[in-house]
Length: 336
Image (cartoon, rainbow, N blue to C red):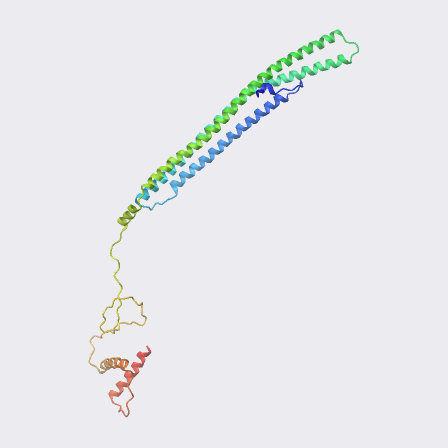
C-alpha cells in the first residue's frame, strides 16, 4: 500500500493542468482559515472569561451575603465570599492566558503564510512559463503541420522549442515535488500545532476547574468548622434580654365588695365596668346625701329580694315616698 504523500498523489496527466497543485493550495488555505477561526474562538472565550471574572468579583464586593450572621457561620460566609473572589481572579488570569494562546496561533499562522508565499510565487512563475512555452511550441507545430514544405530552419526552431519546453517541464516537475514536500511538512506542522493548541486549551480549562475546586474546598472546610450549638450560644450571650417572663394576668371583680384577686383567665374588657363610686369630700349631713345612701342600700336589697308589694292605704309620709323612689331606681338599675 502506497504511503499517502503529497508528492505521490497530486499529479495530473495533462501537461497544462494544475489540479493537483490547486487541490493542495486549497487545503492549505482551509487549514489557515481553521487556525483563524480557532484564534477568534480563543479571543471570544477570553472576553467571556474576563467578563465572568469581573462579574464574580463585583458580586462578592457589592452584593451582601449573610452579613448579619454571627460566629462560626459568619466566618464560613467570609471564607466563601473570599474564595468566590479568588475564583473571579483566576478567570481573569485564564482570560489573559487565552489571549496569549490566540496571539501565538496568529503568529504561527502568519509565519506559515510567509513561508508559503515564497513557494507559491515560484510555482506560479513556473506555471506561467510552462503555459507560454507550450503555447509557443504548439503554434509552431501547427504551422509546420499545415505547411506543405517543411523548412529546415523551422524544423530546427520547433526542435529547439520542444527541448525548451521539456526543460521547463522537468524544472516544473522538480519544483512541484519540492513544493509538495514543503507543503506536506507545513501541513503536518499546522496539524500538530493545532492539535497541541487544543490540548493546551483543554488543559487550561481543566486546570481552572481544579483551581476552582481547591478554592471551593476551602469553603467546605470552613463549613465543617461551623457549629450550630456555638452559634446559638453566641447569639444568646450577645443578644439576651432577660430570664423572667411576664407575670400571670389576674382577674379582679370590681363589683365584689371584698375585691379579692382571683387567678384565672382574663375575661376581656367589660364595657359596662365603671369602677367604685368616689366618696365625696366635705359633705354636710344634709337630707339629700342621706337619701342617696339610703336609696343605694334599698336598691341592693331590691335586687336580692325582688320588688316589694305595693302597700294598701299608705299615707303620703316620707317613708313611702322614699320607697317609691327606691323602686324607680331599682328598675333603672335592672335596665342598665
